[in-house]
Length: 203
Image (cartoon, rainbow, N blue to C red):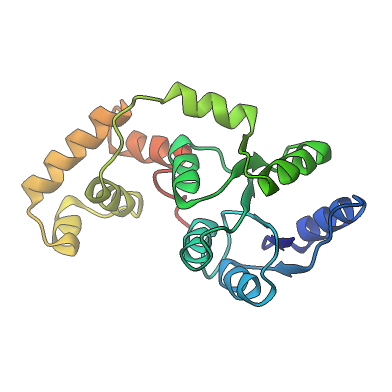
């Protein structure tokens, strides 16, 4: 399998743990999403274990690129990030499982074996959050774009100019965003959106 994570200590720990299993061999590592795509293409591993928050290209973008080229790729997300929207996107892109880095070693091992035979695994905490928001109205692509700019501290006028829309449209979309997220104001909406995975934290 191939391990993709930008923290060498995490990769080392996973490699040591998985190499102790008789039926598992770590054949490669990657430190960012771009390298994960390249290494997958070169090695063609049975499975990719990938983090989401990585430099160059993030995990979701890497999953999308790999699955577009290799439609049968078995991919497990192993991350620190909860967020029902992020989870839904990972599965929509083709991930077979979504685990948290707080998972015990044997949980990861079981998920890997399940993924290799086409079964899905989702961490209990993740499943609970997904269930909590099941049926909620999702943000549209335009609303997400506006919220990303709000998170950068941009004014309505700046957002309108950047997206080539009117300020009235920005205001209307913000009202829709706050209604969907049950937010009190734009700052609250950004906090909720980051927590649920609609947008990433501002670096």
